[in-house]
Image (cartoon, rainbow, N blue to C red; front, side):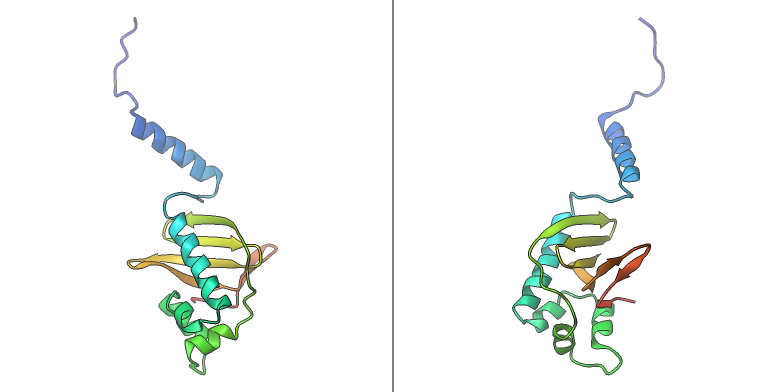
Length: 142
């Protein structure tokens, strides 16, 4: 039997290599740990909007998103948010997590989120894809 010298691959390093390969093939997108929290935050955001509860929906926004929603005339976040053209949704199509950022795609909207110490916060919503361009959003943290 031949003598093989050097370290043998361990299960964690083999799993890490497979993970890196899959991340490279999927553009670093992962649906797994973390995606449940992002999905739940986006669903809750839409649920609150549909119920007309702009005040509670605003609590799910990042600080910079609140600033964008309020606009240059500094309107109340709840009033401004409920007046934006954000379509109601029925189902989540996909959730992608990229490090501390996430994208939740619904049947009629796309919501961007960022992970903060207190959980996932909405950074953009009312988003529609545009061919070869960034999403067009009703608001976004700038």
